[in-house]
Length: 96
Image 1 (cartoon, rainbow, N blue to C red):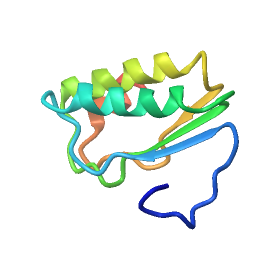
Image 2: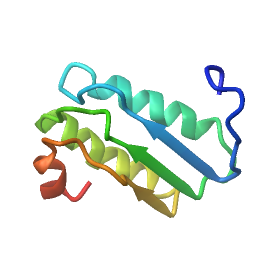
Image 3: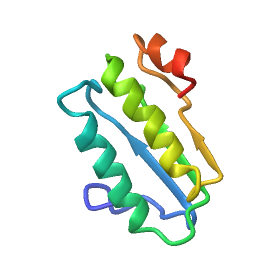
């Protein structure tokens, strides 16, 4: 919101885009950044993660996304990723 003040806040919804590869060295940072945003919202119902800007997801990144999906389940009734990283066959195997 700070970078795009014209964006509209939708109550109960978190939409985030990961703009880098998701790999072993940044997976935990990304997870913590998303969880910080989740904690800042009241009554989260839906979380949408856009991975279209993530050119690569390694095994550690896929495991983190799977864990994040599980962690968001109590807070958000739905977690979706409308577009996956091009090389994210691992995510598909883990059903992220």
